[in-house]
Amino acid sequence: MTVDMEIVCIGNELLIGKVVNTNASWMGKRATSLGVAVKRITVVADNIEEMATAFHEVLARKPRFVVTTGGLGPTFDDKTLEGIAKALNRNLAVNQEALDMVKAKYAKYAKTRNIPEGELTPAQVKMATLPEGTMPLVNPVGTAPGVRVDVDGAVLFVLPGVPREMEAIFEASLMPLLRSATGDVGFFELSLYVDNLMESVLAPLIDNVMHENPLVYIKSHPKGREGTPNMGELHLSTSGLPSENPQERLKKAAVQLSVLMEKTGAKVVRSET
Amino acid sequence: MTVDMEIVCIGNELLIGKVVNTNASWMGKRATSLGVAVKRITVVADNIEEMATAFHEVLARKPRFVVTTGGLGPTFDDKTLEGIAKALNRNLAVNQEALDMVKAKYAKYAKTRNIPEGELTPAQVKMATLPEGTMPLVNPVGTAPGVRVDVDGAVLFVLPGVPREMEAIFEASLMPLLRSATGDVGFFELSLYVDNLMESVLAPLIDNVMHENPLVYIKSHPKGREGTPNMGELHLSTSGLPSENPQERLKKAAVQLSVLMEKTGAKVVRSET
Picture 1 (cartoon, rainbow over the protein chains, first blue to last red):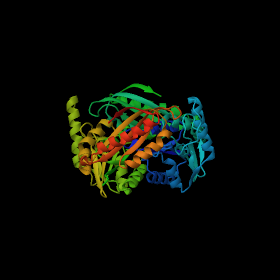
Picture 2 (picture 1 turned 30 degrees about the horizontal axis):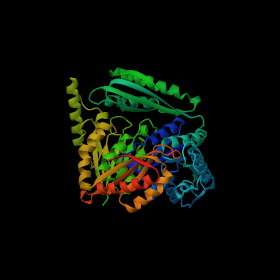
Picture 3 (picture 1 turned 60 degrees about the vertical axis):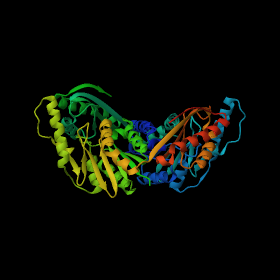
Picture 4 (picture 1 turned 135 degrees about the vertical axis):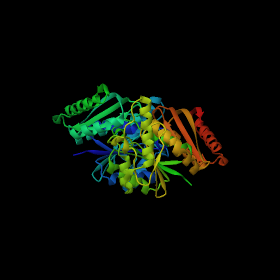
């Protein structure tokens, strides 16, 4: 059974091209490594309506997991929890456990800087104001807690947008859950770097090998130009249990493809797993 | 009137985190620079059903422009035109104009390599097989033509995934159209790099300045950790006609924000436009 996931990234900076979405690729890679099928990535603005619409749509597709990043901080543009509350039709309220987490962070910061510990400001309390019926997640490196929401059979993880904070919570809170959902299934990949090949000559060879090896997915990544036979990467991937020998499956397909390509004058320069 | 755009990126490599989606940020930046509002980025797999569903959803939101990248090449995983045909309920057929473009490319390649010009292979003809009622776009640097689809008041541009090809068609075919849609509207931005600031202290100051300057959007990008006052970037942006003095608007807000921040002990180290 496929364990599927959707990713939702929130932030105007992603839409205006100020920031490249490395969070999505990082999460995609980590989840895929455990055999999770990442089905879609959606990027929306810091806008409650846009977010609520997107979350509605995502949850309607019934993925097993949803991860969202961005919009958990103290500033006005951090609206993700409001967007989720609206999408789920739940109220927002200060969550005592989250408040304790935030308080502990500021107490520690005050101590480090040797200043008196003050009351939390409204901007700080905002980070502990969660949709009702949700669970805060410890943020090992930053201030805003992550949030876990269980809804309609899906588990939604709400993570900060700062990469090192997102990664820390993802590793600590998500990976164990994803690992137990996929069991021993793993994702395996093998790249063939090929010289002197044209993609359109390659196309029927890939068809042939994929037909013979239906569990292996082959994708060509041309590096040069179609007109001048050039270096290209052929990326072979498969998922499976160790007992199914997925690595052998990949190797077999890679050998078949190499033989066919070399007949056309192409040359496999190296392979990489 | 806002001219809005959605971006759809197609490719398993984006979902599994093998490739970072720099196409989306490049397009987002170029469109934003003309005052276009990029509302959403959607990434889906090389799967006809997934694509057709996504295109349906995107078109139902009635954006003025849609740009999609990826899946136009000769290999089996290049399925974008099939996905669009399915979404629009149109047939696929060889488009003579597109076929002439593809033929001309291969004739040129053959000449360059001093080999006889052969018949196009099925994989090569596939790049000229378009949904009916669409228009091929010259690809100045690669083989697969781009495609323009006019549907329900939206203009959908279908571009290759190879960045230099996507960029060339975007510049040649999209930019003039976007420019004439937004007229003289431009997008302006200004960054303040600030030292010794905590994001939660900053939050009410941003609220204050945005309230006074409703056309200016301010977003904070923390670089350090909340606990240790550190370097951060405050990104101010606005759109407008030259006659509205959008740059002056930005400067005014930046000065107000700088004065407020400096009262809290933060220090504006430099500003950048």
